[in-house]
Image (cartoon, rainbow, N blue to C red; front, side, top):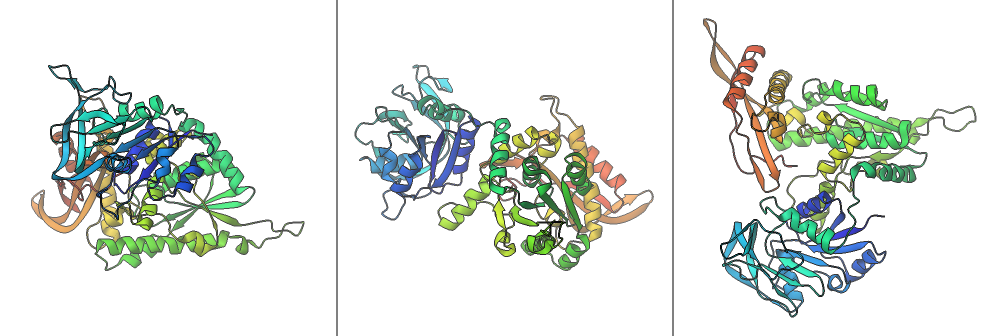
Amino acid sequence: MHQKILILDFGSQVTQLIARRVREAHVYCEVHPCDVTDEWVRQYAADGTLKGVILSGSHASVYEDTTDKAPPAVFELGVPVLGICYGMQTMAHQLGGKVEGGHKREFGFAAVRARGHTALLNDIADFTTADGHGMLKVWMSHGDKVTEMPPGFKLMASTDSCPIAGMADESRRFYAVQFHPEVTHTQQGKAILERFVIGICAARPDWVMRDHIAEAVEAIRQQVGDEEVILGLSGGVDSSVAAALIHRAIGDQLTCVFVDHGLLRLNEGDMVMDMFVGKLHAKVIRVDASELFLGKLAGVSEPEAKRKIIGSEFVTVFKAEAAKLKASAGGKLGVDGRPAVKGATWLAQGTIYPDVIESGGAKSKKAVTIKSHHNVGGLPEQLGLKLLEPLRDLFKDEVRELGVALGLPPEMVYRHPFPGPGLGVRILGEVKKEYADLLRRADAIFIEELRNFHDEATGKSWYDLTSQAFTVFLPVKSVGVMGDGRTYDYVVALRAVQTSDFMTADWAELPYALLKKVSSRIINEVRGINRVTYDVSSKPPATIEWE
């Protein structure tokens, strides 16, 4: 059994980054809503595996009667507690300190002086001043601040504008910081969180994906027994890793349904089949539904309407296929008179931890939901099937590690994310087969050249240096010259994005030589396109495809 850290979520959109950083230290942790009861907290800690608690940030003000506070039991368990931003403020407020509204919000970089040589910050610094003071380069985001520390606390960190930027009660192992160690802008953030979970909480760093396979396989076998499972295989990373893991656990008890909506990248459908049927020897039913989807999308140009059509149509097609595989539809009898085909009683989904957190937050109305829930929501109930979610405890980076450990090719597992609606949302305006075919070929050239083109400074390909890259089809015709004649053909836009975490997403400054080669190839090789542009839109929402 893994030792664990409990993260209580007060609604900050970066709460899950805390969990990611803890997991990166190979310590298991879970995120739960902050309004759990004292009884729930005590029960959660009862088996002795809870080693510490982290209180997250929030957009609220702790001194208002209506805002959430930490369950008092958190401070009575005898385990270390770390408060971050609002977490620090609620710790101060609840333990006898004082929090006040600031005259000026602080948002962005700050240089914080570490004081008091506490166990949390001792020997952790970015630079030292001429006076010998250790300084930390951190990221702040707050309006309110602690103006009076609770009894028993001493000053741990300060800035000119935030005199109490950190506090500690080392006898009770309570620590709190006003800045955000979970975001990559705080340069020593990883070291601070590791110090807390491994150094102070003494949690075992045994959360390792290679070892997790055996645990997950055993859990799936226990859950499913000898029953059969169906999985909607989209070809994306999450469903692919879920399929590989479940197949490792139960083999032919799993049937994958691959709904090909005709809006995949070039040869992507064939690659999915080659991998899962050819190499893993899994049972996969490929449903060619491209005409159906294109028919439903005819005349629709509004992006959200297209997303909804693609999503609901996927559900319709999947339901029809799943119905054939259900126990009630099996029907064939063996020699002993019992059903030879038991049929599926489980629906598997590649739900990952951020989906769970966000959908939970949406229900409680506390978390600020950033991206929509793309899962096949409601299907288990509609089909009368039990739900199997073997990845629900994992983050995307952990899913990728797990996929490689399961034997999936790294280039498949680490490929850029592609939205569920596929090319449907990369074609501006109405989706037509002609547009999809042109876009597929242009996009394939872009991706190929990103893989071929290496950055001299790092030696990495530009595909690896970007977190997301794709081509967008613009349904307008632009003038070009081919030979002696004037042509009027379509335009595509190239898009490449670099991200480091939720807070940072920006367009990639691709070399001109690369852009020149890509545009020349597209114009020369894809008849029907004669102009290529590069999208330099910055900041969200233009960079929204976060992972």
